[in-house]
Length: 410
Image (cartoon, rainbow, N blue to C red; front, side):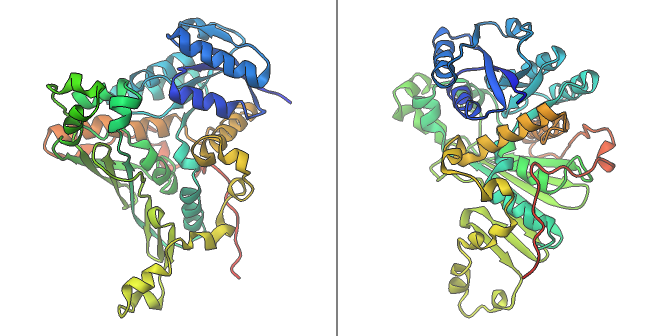
């Protein structure tokens, strides 16, 4: 079978995790790795050798890897601030590009990403794995089938206490952003699946946003609790503990996003869909349709409990990839969604199909960071969200990341 020759740039924790996932995909060979760290490059080479019995070329310089004619596709797993820049360089070099998620630093770099794609026509996919997660896909399938009625409101969050990761486990580039910026700094995990369900850039678009941020107390307090954090006890933290963003859409829906990464809380993306006939709530694995007992307030708590974890009752609406997933595939990163994401990327790349998350999606979703930063700095002032399709959203057809089943009512 035809395989895609892949070069990986960034061999840190995330990069190594994705290498592990890609090595389980028969559609690709890792032929090159790139990192400024000799140690990380060596670890990546060793991983490939152990699994595939082949030795990828090792590069310390990204530009050198781009000159390698054997590299057909580039997977970018570097630090946030390099993602868009490297994606632009990769597309200009004619390499099919997979860009890990992160944030934007200004809106202009999002425009440059789109312009480069339009000029080069080099395929690019932003690797937003949450677009492939089970509950998000189940909810989208229910919405596509009409079970939820007309969608009115959606909510998502990146709720993940990262203080240990920043100050002890992965003392890295993320901390620098928290010291110098105040924004919705990681929007795509929650926004990506929402935008896909609402057909953003394909019949719908985001119009404007407002963002507000709380005080910055959680990370500052944590400096004194971690050994590596003590070097920062006198630093000023700009990133608010809780950032709330409200987005309005052309078709009338409202989206709310919450960034919550420096206070105690369990991990959650809080994915929520509200429609005229029902709603889906990820935290409770709940699917709920309008029915008589919802309006019976005699025992509201018992009524609600009957619906907790009832998402399992709607397996017929799951796409095939989740109905047939194996235990081994579920262990390939984030419960299996990393594996599904790469399978979709490789399929599109090898068959010349549209990328499930394309340049316009990447630009729109990533621009939320820079725009939220402006809104917060202006006291929550509304910010227009650019139309990166330049009007093409009106006629671009729907493109789901997977094919949804047609379910007949029993």
